[in-house]
Structures are given as C-alpha cells and as structure tokens.
Image (cartoon, rainbow, N blue to C red; front, side, top):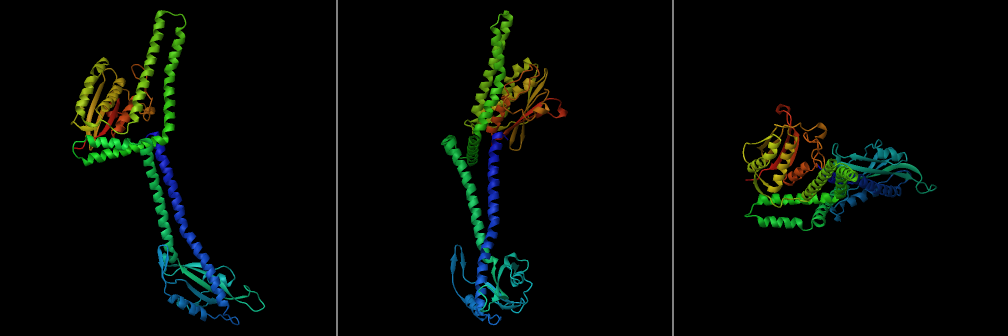
Length: 488
C-alpha cells in the first residue's frame, strides 16, 4: 500500500475511532443521566408525601387513612398522556410507610403490609436521619424488574418545635419501576445511534462530492457515458465492473486531493536528489573544459557531459510518463488482448539485445489467456520487466517468459539467472528512483521502470511482484505480473 493510501485510510480510521468513542460515551451515559433525573423527582415526591403524612400525626401515631384513599383513587384514574413516542395510561408510582421500628404500616400495592423493612437501606438510613435510597429487583434475576426507592423521614413536631424539626417516628418511601423511564432511555439511545450513522453517511457523501465535484467535476459521468456508447450489445456484468472502476477512480482522486501536498513535496524532493548527481558531474566537466588540455581529454569530458545530459533527459521523460500514468484512473482503450502472441512478439523484439549479451530468451506457455487491457501499456509493462531481466543476466544466461492460469488470474512470469535481489533491497525495488547497479556496467538506471510497471498493473486491477527464485532453481530473480482474466 502506498504512503498516500496509508495516510488516507489513517484519516478515515481516526475519524471512525473518534466517532465510535463519542457514540459509546454518549450512549453509555444516557441511562445514568435518566436515573439521576428520576431520582431527583422521587426525592421531591417522598418529601411531599412525608409532609402530607405529618399533618395527620396525632400524639406520635401515624395515620395513613388519607394516604390509602389517595393512592386507590390515583390507581383508578383513567387517562392517556402521549409523552413523545410513549403513551402513558396509568399511575405506576408506588409508596409504603414504616413506623419507627421499620415495620410497614401502609403499602400502596398491598403486598408488604406488616413486614419488617428495617434492614432495607432506604428505611434504615432514613430512620437514622440520613438520606436513604436503593434499587431492588422485583423479580430476582430479571434486570427489567428493577425499582428505584427514595425515602423521606416522617417527623412528629410539637407546637414548641419549628417545621422540619422534631422526632423521627417513621419513614415514607416512594418507588418507581426503572422500566417506566427505561423506554425513554432506549428511544434516546436509538436516536443517538441514528444520528451517529447519519453523521458517518454524511462524511462518506461529502467525500464522494469532493471527489466528483471538486476533483473530477464531470469526468466520472462522461467517461461512463462514453464507455456505454462504445459497447456493442448489453453486458450487465461488464457495465458493473466499469462502474466499480470509475468509483475506485473517484476514491483515488479524493485521496490524492487530501494527501496531494505531501505527495508532490516528496516527489520533488526525490527528483531533486536524483538530478543533483548528474548536474554536479556536468558542472565539473564544464569547468575543467575551460582549462587548456589535450584533445583526447577534452573529448572524454564532452562525452561525460553528453552521457549525464542524456541521463537527465531520460529521467525527465520517464518521470513525465509515470506522472501522466498516475493521473489516469481507468483504462480508456481497454480491449481483449491475447497474452501468448504478446509474449512471442516481445521475445522476438528483444532477440538482438539478448544476442549481444550472449543471452537466450524462451517462452513457456501452458495455454493462451485473454485479458481486458490497454495493448500499449501492457506491452510496456512486460517489456520493462524483460529489459530489467536482461540488464541483470550474466553472459550465457537464460531468460524465461512464462504464462500460467490460476483461477480468475493470468500470471505472466519473467525469470532470469542474475545475482538476484539483495536482502536490503527487497522492499524498495518498486520505489521511485530506487535502482541497483547493473553487474556489467556498474551503473544504475533511472529507477522508474518498475514503478511504471506497478502503476500499469494497478490500472489493470492487477499487481506485480519481484522476488528471488527458490534455491532449487538456482540464482536469479522472478518477476510476476498478475492480471484478471477476461470473462468469457
């Protein structure tokens, strides 16, 4: 994966992790916040009921008759309250009153009358004058049956004492099933997740818009329209593959737009470094030519200037070709290409160069394969691999062009008998401007040939590999170009 792709995917990953972290924090915080809100309301309700009960206390005795009739009437009320998405039709608030010993003297549900609640946290703490609250399951093991309880003290206040003071003679506890507000929590959680999903989709849509409108305003649709117009007949599979290629092209354009500044800076820096050496040689030779010298020596310096100038020219030409190729996202001239005739043609074209180096080129093909490709670019890619093999082949060496089929892939191989790839260069051979010295001339190439092949392979939805041959086959390197077979 290129540096640009890593940067782009890194940005998307950071965004995804950040959005997931925010959503997780918000969603996990919903339930506690709703519980806190419900608890605050229950505290006020318990204080209100405690005040009501205190009005009916006589000589330190709690009278719950009015409380009993109040809850019976409330439970019997019929109403319908539409609270956002929840329709509430009954009162679910519950309450019980205990005396100073913790014995229940009133229970709105009628289930705990006369029971000892002195060990429950809400009653125990409230009777001591502290804040008492608890959450208990109505049905053991069922978290959906949880009930929140908040208690307030019931005081007996004599005439000489002020309001809010006096002896604690009991406690009143109000309860609320968690499930009653749990449905609000579930609704809020769904809305939050929905908003997060909409945010993610909005970012993706924005990315597509940036790609289509800012980078390639009309090219995507125009390319697809021209492709459809050029087709003879209706081929759904082929049209879908073309559409997918165009979408990949839009993504690549967007990625380059986001990471373009660093990419250009890296490109210029590398090119400057590579051109610096031949320019220094030209400058040195030009300065020496200004001094008196023999004609033979002068010709040698002129030859050096010519050679280094040619090297810069070749580097610039290759650079322009590679840059033009990188700006292409889809194949404009794709057509069926039979690989066997192509390999035979390239082997024949390289015969004279191979003869000069006393090398032999053979073609080993098990069966012919047809691919959808740009004939010119594909010829350039295989030719570059073949030239690279010739550069590193020893005298009397053998270069083998192979063609195999593996599933839906066509596999073109170029094997040589050279020294192979050093360990330190294994991960760098496809980098721009990286080159190894040729065994014969001890000189390096422009270092753009294999990068050119890599771009062509990517443009054809394929890949290229270069590795050393297995020890059983002897020394040498093996280049493999993978291309998708043309659907029958």
